[in-house]
Image (cartoon, rainbow, N blue to C red):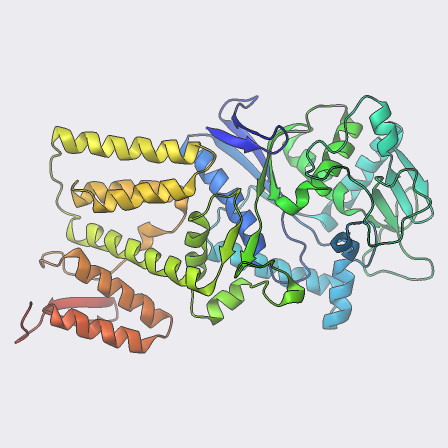
Length: 484
């Protein structure tokens, strides 16, 4: 299996220290608001990577963090050590405690995780539940001579790190990592690139989230949590780190520096995988622009989260994806068509299996090989989806089509095995009618009863009547209807 490594800037063969055992860490959400479709794309990327590795019989230990403290608003201005804690800001805005804010948005994130059919990580770890680990890591960095204290906190010493023969910022896409250009520089810092490991609570003020430390009462810097938690659950050196491309500029380089400074173990992570941004109508996505759509917006507009997952599959993860309501509609339509074929294969052909000719057997093997080639080639999901549609259009028996599609869905994660349409398998019903029936069921679920009625009439014209029962929609030959 090959994947693009952001650290080396090339596609590489995945080689693990312990063959068939893989450690993966994905940077999770800061739980001060609802997750946008841009962020969900990154988490789906992590899920697809986990599924693909499992498809090739690897045992995966998958860890994801929940940032519920320490992520400051200055990150938007290029300096993550300044500004107000996002959790505290949301607390003031919504009139709830910061702990209630964290719990509400964490629960919503986990609900969305399930709605998008993502595999639950081996460990989901919250920053506030790992304060001792973060303090211990800062202690180690101090002991190695790579940290110092000033009036507002404890900082990592980039200059000392480089003097030790280390390179800082190799992962970043910036020419050089420096303080944000839109904030006042911190004159006490030894180097503009130095970053906070521990921040002190403001003098005379009490934060809702603060802890005692050897250096004073305060809270951890944003970067230190990922190092502390990933190393706790995956070790001082692990295989793959996943995140959005926005984290590649400073957050991930800082993770590398502080981790390797503390342990002396290199590399901290062997493969870095970053997902590209999502645009909306060809423009930048942002909360201030009002276009940072969430899963709630998706559902309010009559779409299911799985349509969004299908949309993600249509683009390469390293390429920016342009989200439009039209593209989501096309993804929903394609997903329903895929479901309709699976319904037809499963219900009409479930008791029959044709012995494959040598030619068709070769075709099945070829589709299998092409799918494996696609997913192992830097997670080429668009090509993998194309192979699935070729299978559907092929002349191999329907039961073999079903076997292949459900096998592919182990990676796609579209829950196609759960597709059900109640049809008497003894009836001679073609896949077109089954597709219409499945589309009608989806229209009814989404409340589009006008479309459901239109489909009922189309099916009637084809010679079948729909009976809605407690066990689902059933078809029977219609009386006195000319089937053209």
